[in-house]
Length: 443
Image 1 (cartoon, rainbow, N blue to C red):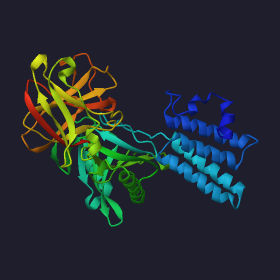
Image 2: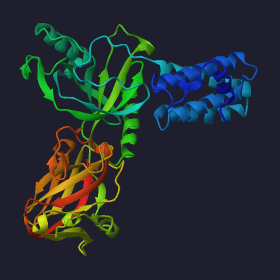
Image 3: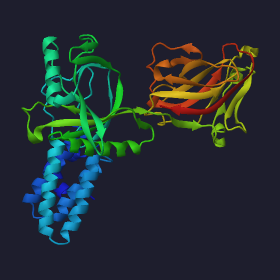
Image 4: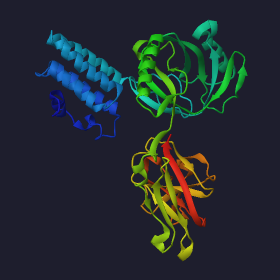
C-alpha cells in the first residue's frame, strides 16, 4: 500500500515520476525529490499531517533509492524518529520534517561548475552517493604542498598554467597522506583540459605528468572540505570497498575540489575518492566436480563427421577437455559448451582462462543474447605443452562467426550479453587433444 501522503500526491499529478522504472525523462534522484517535495508540502496542509505520514515519506524515499547511501540515511531517520516519539510525538514530527527537508536539499543539489571538465571526465558524483567511476588518461601539473601548504601549491600551479597559456579546468586534485588517525594534504594538481596539451616533465616548481586511466570509488560531498570530513568519507569508502571482494585499493586517497573561494558554504562541492582495481573473481572453478558435468559436447558429428570430445573431472582438481579431431566425412571440429552464464559477466572487463595445454591452438567461444543462436563470438589461443599458463581476453578480442565464416555486419561482443561459453579445437589439428582447465576468472 502506498504511504498516505503519496496517495494524496497522486491525486494532484501523474505518479509516473515517482516510480524508479516507469519514467526515463528524469534521473531517479529528481523523481524521488519531486515525490518527497510533495509529501512535505502535504504534511503542512493536509489534515493527516503528523509523524506517521512523515515516516511513511522517509520509508518511501528509502524504497526508491535501493541500496544507496541516502537510502540508509532515510532508514536511520525513521529509526530515530520512532525513538524521539516515545517522549514527544510533536517534537519528533518537527525534527523529522526538518531532516527530510535537508534530505530534499541533498537530492536537488547541483554542483557549481566554474570551469570545464577535462576531456572524457565523468560527471561529478551525486551528493552522499558512492560511485565506481572510470577516469580516462589525463595530463596534470603537480606541486608538492611543502612548507607553504595548499596556498603555496596553488599559486605555483596557477603561475604555471598562466605562463604556458593552459586553460583552467575543474576539478583540482589534492592527494592525501595518512597521518596517525588523520590525513594531511601532500600534493595538489591542476588537470589539463586535453592530454595533448603541453608535454610531460619538470617545469620549474611543478612537474607535468601523465596519469593512466584508472577506476576510483567516489563519494560526493556538499559544503567545505576539511581534514575531518575527508577522514570520515575515506572510512565510508573503505567500508564500501570491503563489501566488494572484486575490488582492492590501488592508490592514495584524493579529493577532487570543484570550487574557488567565491563559492561559499553549502553551495560548495567536492568528491573524496580512493583509486581501486578490479581483481580476479571466479566465474567457474573447475575444482568443483559438478562444473565439468555442465559442459555439453558439440562436435562435427552433427554434420556427419567423426570427431569426438568430452569435458570430465580430474582427480587433481581440474577439468579436462579431451577427445580426437578427425577430418573424415568433411568433419574438422570438436567442442564443448557450458550451461547458462547469462548475467554473470555483466561487470567483467576481462576473462582469464587458467589452463595447461598440449601445444595446440584452441578457441574460447561465447554466445550472446544480442544475436541469433547460430552466431558465435570466438578468440583463439595457443597453448604450451604440459605447462600451466593464463590467457586473458577482452571483449574486443572476439570475432563473430557463423559456421566458420567471419561476419562483418554484426555488432561487437559485449560481455554483459553473454549467455554461454564454449571451447573448440579445429583448423585441421587432427588426432588426440587434451586441454586442462583450473578456472575461468573475471576481472
